[in-house]
Image 1 (cartoon, rainbow, N blue to C red):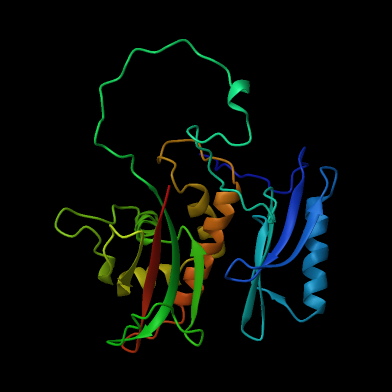
Image 2: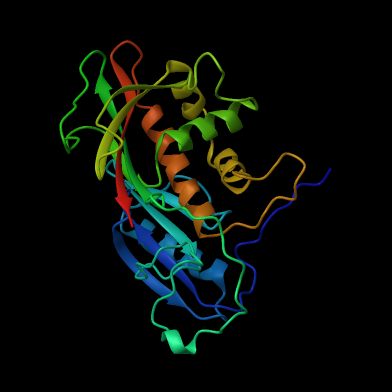
Length: 276
């Protein structure tokens, strides 16, 4: 069966952006590309310019992104349809309508009354921000922040479920079981989840580290695109979320390669915040 391949360099009818990030998603450079732009040519020109400045590409930009390295410092050059200066959430909630006068909203026919939920409160949305880092065996820094001298990278939406789903896709089997909810990821410390802000620390198993260390950029791209797709479903097109997963997966692979068995372990610190 032929595989589905999304051409990120196909002629676009909408604006695109070529963005250079550091591994903490800080914008280093951004270029707006009009719909008529030759996306592949723009990407090649940008890589050549950065190469002249000493940045060496770690791969090929076949999927619309490439990591670059100079003296151990890494950057991510990525082609995206999302304006990097747009700070609005990437998800839409039909229960939140802003900027529209109430009188301008369409009126619908009255609905039958629903059962009363008196005394019940709606569940808050929970945002997460994860930091993967290396720690000496037996010495886990449980401070508020991970020190800058420790090999690490951070990203929104990086949490335990991300790593568990990654392990499931890498092994082709379920990463959980009834006896052990997360055999490849162990919760070792954390604050009360009921607090408005909580922090949890996880330890990655040696097996998970090995799986991540063998992850290639091509395999990471396949996993990122098939992230939520059932095995028999048509592979969805790449989008902003797909590209974010790609960046996280490649950063995890790079960090896992630095693990020294018996000396260091791969850890995950996740900060959860309740949002109304």
